[in-house]
Length: 478
Image 1 (cartoon, helix red, strand yellow):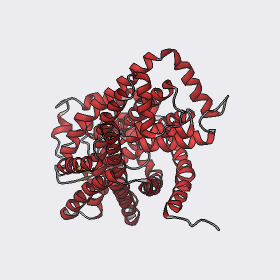
Image 2 (cartoon, one colour; image 1 turned 60 degrees about the vertical axis):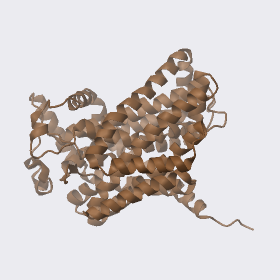
Image 3 (tube, rainbow, N blue to C red; image 1 turned 180 degrees about the vertical axis):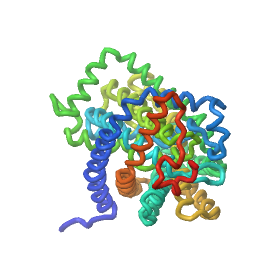
Image 4 (cartoon, helix red, strand yellow; image 1 turned 45 degrees about the vertical axis):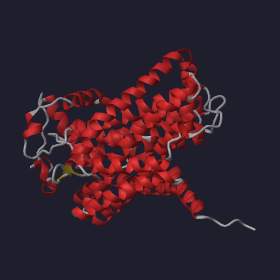
């Protein structure tokens, strides 16, 4: 007698096909196309990215960017921090560990690959978000829903994306983040999940009710501190194991291409897990970070496109790599641990003293990583709620629902939620990739215009008349 299929079985089967085959293939193809047509913008303009980020972090250094009436009140650095807040979360600690546990050390190589080539998609989507942004009450607003409607004039397509990203980030991913925090505190301190659920729900409501300015200020303060602390820990552990680095790099390359004993997974498993976890972590091409990129006050769309590209490197090449090296240097990745527990045990093994030190540090780190993700994820949903229907009551109801979902996520198992999240994430990514492939020519025109002005020694400024065919759709640049 055949066992009956459960909803979980059906959701797992659908998400497996969508994420393991369709999404991974389209994501890589689109990233390679953008890498070619932009002539490797993610490699050739790294110096310009760093220059822009450092400049954007200075206060009142460019009066045109601050005082111009066409610009909002969110700085370029704040928008960058907001997008990093969403990227840097459980994916960097639990997601990387899961990729290594299921795909072997080779998964790390494919995470690097998707970051390096996928950064071109991040550039295109964030540049388009700036080009087609609109004025909100207190700041600019934009993202895939906006550039799909204004650039492609497909309202149904835009609304579909808006619904998918709200379900994925505002609800499903936020449930995962709050569940991870509650589990970590329960495991480390025996703190009841029910109490943590209340604390997280209240904190979330207080911050998100303050609007995008409060969200961006919170991210600007917390994100750099938590990222630097975690990277410093990884550096200490790498230095302690400096003699093992050649061995670790060998394991990564062998696992990626099947040379020698590919411990922990096949080449196919390494590629799929690396790409999936890499996408979940850095979000390049997914359509989420353009919502943050659009809020920035800059004089040319390419500026924020370049800065957001740097965010992909920060997330994957720095923070995810830090987790990977901690786990691989510990030598315990094949002992049956998974997720956040594997990361905790790896740090325990390196720092000694039982699992008090590692568990405590990871518990505190995951709180900041995951909570800032909750805040940024909420904003992505708010932007798209406003796109569907610009109604204050709708936003207030959404805020209450997000707070409730954060509470529920902390106290219930999330296997089914993860399955639905994978499906909506895959559909959302496919919607966005199709849109930026169709609109990519505008990003190329903007990039050429930016480079031309830089060669002339100018600080690039964009005017809507540069692309006459969409001048009426880019009113923020008049």
